[in-house]
Picture 1: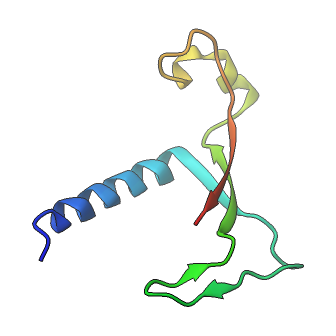
Picture 2: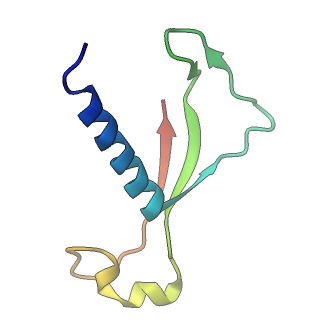
Length: 85
C-alpha cells in the first residue's frame, strides 16, 4: 500500500494533459523497422518509441510575438526530438 499513489496518479494525469496541450507528437516512420516489445513486468518497447515533438501553434507569424515563449527576451521557435522509453 502506497500513501502517495493517488496523488502520483493525479500529478501524472495533469502533466500528461499539459504536455499534450502544448505539444504535437508524431511517431517517426517505422515501416522499415517495426517496433519490438520487451517482455518484463511492464510491456516496453525495445529501443523506445521514437517520436517527433513540435510546439503547437508554430507559424511564422507567431515568431513575431515574444509572449509565445515565457521569459524569453526574443521570440524563439523550437523543435524537439524525443525518445520515450
